[in-house]
Length: 339
Ligand SMILES: Nc1ncnc2c1ncn2[C@@H]1O[C@H](COP(=O)(O)OP(=O)(O)OP(=O)(O)O)[C@@H](O)[C@H]1O
Ligand SMILES: [Mg+2]
Image (tube, rainbow, N blue to C red; front, side, top):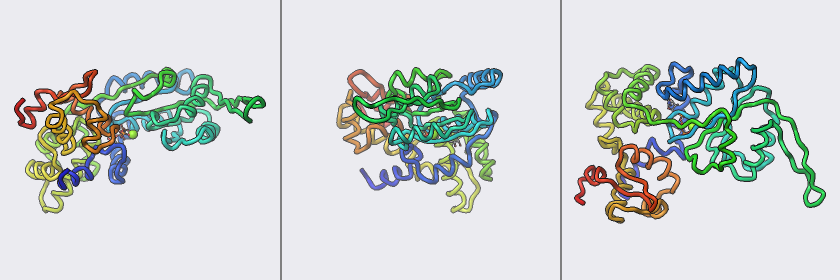
């Protein structure tokens, strides 16, 4: 890998598996705090509003809800909005943070009635812990096994009524018993339209005190991978460059900032292009298995699958076949390689 691609990778807005502190800061400062500010995802919002209203009328916590989809599309934001809407306390944790059955038991027994528990990256919960979650989700009870061998016995604790909100970028890794217990619904977040992303950029610009015209925001939107987090990241980089160059934000500044980040006209990063090039140069366009592809790129399989592939699939640059990943004609054209 060249040194430029390494730099681009370190600064990448798409390293969702390992968010930089800057991304986390941006996520919280720019996070919409009402349904009106939450742009797009209309079907999900409509369904959630009915679900929450019906639960409120029955004076019962809403049923458990699962959100899935690529990083940066607004899953965590939705969990926060739901808690706000229902005036509930949100207790947030994540799959990897819950290491032992006891960790989960302690979180659950410390919930107050009506609390919402948010488990991010729920696909990383281990199986033994998942099994403790089943009765908690289904009947609001916690089964604890005391002792070992023939003298072991189970005691059952009643939990306060609560709602589990969960998010994952890899829904396929969830076991079907776990998936089936999200009785409130399982919602897949979709990529945004360019217009929606442009609206998000203008809102963020207002919040960050950045003056931006329509042409510049449109250009950023086009390169944002249809993803709000990426749009916010690019907006900030553009602001930085304008500041350093002592100029106003303009299409020229946007172009320059994008070029410096190695983001091309389709919004692909250096790593995306490396992936396509590897697929084409090393494997004749494929099909090639995910593990082989990830290994040739020195990337984690999970990063390839969660961060890079969804957008490449969305653009029709690659295809998933039963025998692996294939580069499409569009990918050959984009990299100007003859078949
Ligand atoms: N619908 C939206 N409208 C406006 N801004 C949004 C929207 N969705 C997301 N954002 C912005 O993008 C940022 C990232 O969103 P969020 O953290 O909810 O994504 P996520 O799906 O949880 O990502 P990950 O899978 O990496 O955890 C938010 O802080 C917010 O600023
Ligand atoms: Mg999140």
